[in-house]
Length: 68
Image 1: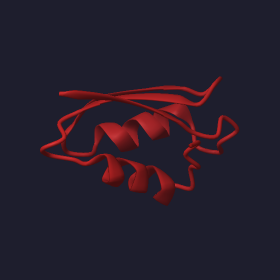
Image 2: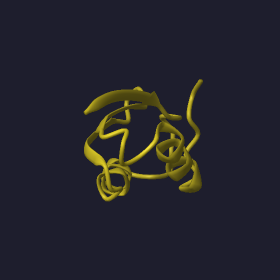
Image 3: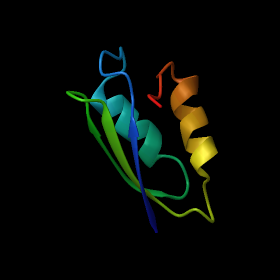
Image 4: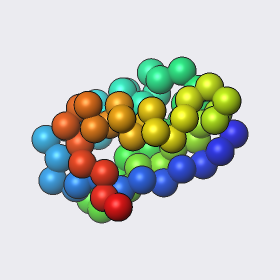
């Protein structure tokens, strides 16, 4: 299990529940926690089942902007 922390634009139109649900429904993601006050997204995932790039791509497909 690996841990990943991403930051998304905090003024997103997508709710915390929607982001967490989206992530938790991806095979290989064990847990996802979102803090919209600062845009922090913490993810525990199995890299042999889901890649960093595919996680980022799914978030971006929902119209979320990942801060670099």
